[in-house]
Image (tube, rainbow, N blue to C red; front, side):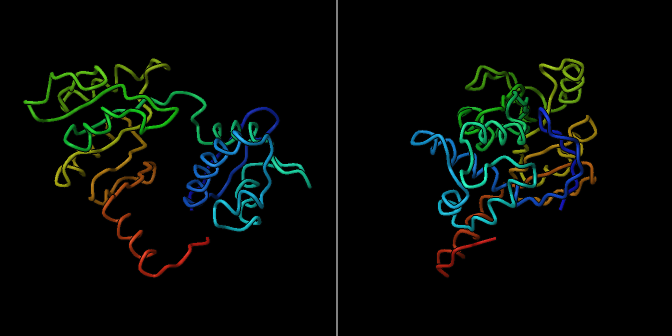
Length: 232
C-alpha cells in the first residue's frame, strides 16, 4: 500500500488515501472498457463493468468510491463523466513529458511506436551511452543524446512547466540499470518505468513500476495451465 494526497477537481476535497497498486491497475482497465462502452451507450453500471472485468460489482464500487462518489444509485455511471474523472485521477488529462534512457531494441521500439504510450505521454528526450547511436535521429525526429548529458538536460527543462521531465523509461541492459537509475534520481527524477529485469533499489520517495515481460509471461502461463480466473 502507498499513501497519497489526492485532489481531484471541482468540489472534491484533499484527502489522504491508502491505495494498492492493484486498484490503480484496475483503474486503467476501467478506462479502456469505458472508452469502448461509450460507442454503444451513455451510461454503465457496476454490474456491467464487473462482468467485463471478471470481478464483482462490489469491487467496482469499492475501487471507484476510493476516489469519490461518482455514480447515481439505481442508474449507474455517466460514461463520459467517469472517463473524464479517471483520466484526471491518472493524471493523463495533461501531457506528461518522458525521457527514454537506453536506445537499444526496447528503447528503439518505444520511440518508433509512440502510440504504445497512449494518451497523456510525450517522449521529449532519448539517451544512450553507445557512441554509434549518439547523434542519430530517432523515428520521432528526436536526436539520441549522450547519457552523460541527461542531468543537464533535466536541469534545463526543470523551470519550464511545459517541458519539465515528469518520468523516465529505463531501457538499458540489466548490468547498467542500478547505476543509470541512481543517476536519474540524483537529477530529480522520482518516477521510473523499469523495462529491465533488474530489481532496482532506490529511495522510498522514488516510485518504480517494473515491466518485466518474462515475469508477465510466467504469470500468464500460470493462469493458462491452471485454468483459473483471478478475482481480487
